Amino acid sequence: MFLIFYECCMTLTGPFKQLLTMDNIPEKGALSDDQLEIISDGGILHRDGKIIETGNFQELKEKYDTTKIEWVEGDYVVLPGMIDVHTHICWAGSRAEDYALRLSGKSYLEIAELGGGIWDTVEKTRKASVEELADLTEQRANRLLKMGVTTIEVKSGYGLSVKQELKILKAISLVNKRIMVDIIPTCLAAHILPKDFKGTELEYLDLIVEKLLPEVMSQNLSSRVDIFIDKGAFSFIAAKSYLTKVKELGFDIVIHGDQFNSGTATLANEVQALSLDHLEAADEQEIALLAAGNVIPVVLPGASLGLGEPFAPARLLLDAGTSLVIASDWNPGTAPMGNLLTEASILGAYEKLTMAEVWAAITCRAAIALKLSDRGILRKGNLADFNAFKTDDYKEILYQQGQLKAGMVWKNGEIVI
Image 1 (cartoon, one colour):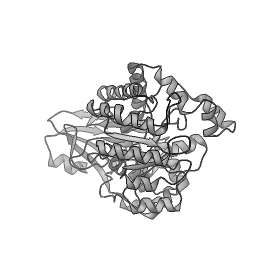
Image 2: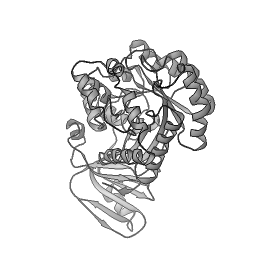
Image 3: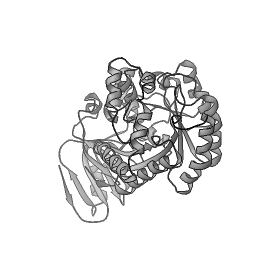
Image 4: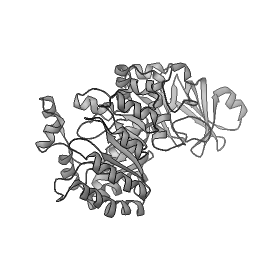
């Protein structure tokens, strides 16, 4: 519960039993919980969607004695808004049949060969209009916002033609204008080789470079490009040629890799990808290569849960000195849960991640993976994006594995949940 007293243009929100700023966290490597900056009885002073100062609530109240007070009643812990750096929430249809087949023992590749998998969603998404896709995406984005996710990366990839990929990216752009949550679009036209394309994978990728990406750039639909490299998707040879051209066009690069087979880290380092996402199959050599470079490992526990496969080696990655980001991978096929906090909590238990490592992976380190320097940390100048959980101890949040939900969510300083 909270009460608001209006006095001026600045707002002081609090008091919070604990305020975790996530400030001064190293960008790479293992973390201990004593590295978390925790302000007792904290407050957040903000104006025009930006944080002016954080600190003890009473001290801020006395320092800024004419400010508007947004009182928070009861014991709450506040943290930065969560950031989900890898989702596929712009789609139509369902893949419940895929899930049933997987439970009966069919593998991911076997289901794809039977007509399921990504192509099944492509056929259903192609039939949907821009407005229909925008409505579906908006519903899913608002669900994430209610969970405390204030920034969401959203990929295309279920169109797999110039016309259809543009349609999906336009739908994502529409949603970005409609709702409070910030959406970061990524062009994943190189998801798989479309079944109805009469040509080689190199010819398809050249089509994307020559016909699609110039339109994406001119219409300001995305500044990021992704590709899926693995068996059943694209080869290393084709991907290297494609990503080299993509880089020359001025796009940032991210890669789906090491999900079923290892070996993508070398290419990721060569093309200076922002992140390498999945990594369930990453071995010691891959981990060493990532530790030697600047590519950010993004692990996707939702895919492991959806497929019944091992988790990515998050503990080994951190101990080797890499960064670590956790994302939901919310998609209709392999990661239908779409609950970042629950997935991160479960991964932490299996991979023996400290609470500091889990929170960094979905806040401050996640922001770096999206090249966003204005969020993920509660400090002066950053966006006033934050979540309050009804508890007096931050440890309760991950301990309850998603059962303790954000009771209040602020986006750009406005309470939206």
